[in-house]
Image (cartoon, rainbow, N blue to C red):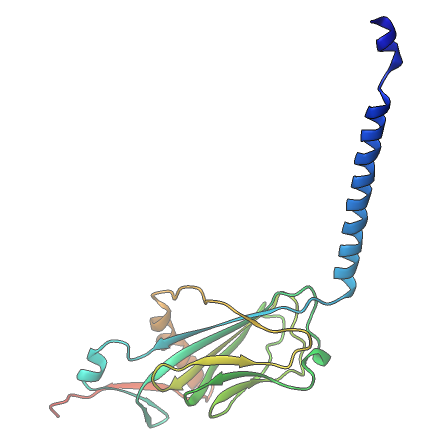
Length: 215
């Protein structure tokens, strides 16, 4: 028994320890290559969502003569559309990555107005938007920073508008996901402050007038 203790670890033990060391070295090498690749090769990822909310969702809005107008023009089926885009890649999306093309928010119903555009964090510049009849174009002469989220609020008129996104970003197909659940106070907050602020800035205002069907 004394001679067995004096012999120390067996050859099998040292072989197993060597194998473990080799595996660990391979894992470390693979991890180093992966992180070096991540640091040098941009992984472009953009996620976006669109929430469509009807201003006339209650049946009584139609049966009791509720009328929504924008700058004097009556809207038959007005909707508020909130579009959110986030750069979730590992690098800023620089101007060259857009290939000289704007990001386009497409609508199959007429776009009445762009009501709001914001960036989170606010210190990073928003991609300035311009509204057209069937789309909103985002100016891509400004970088879309890593971790930045862009939010746009549109007024669209038409039944069940469908919103899509079109881009020419190199090596990137934007991923659409479901928007967060709508907060109950959103519409009240929007009508009370968002539109009023837009009017003060000269964009215009939504005027809601209740007309009696008996008048």
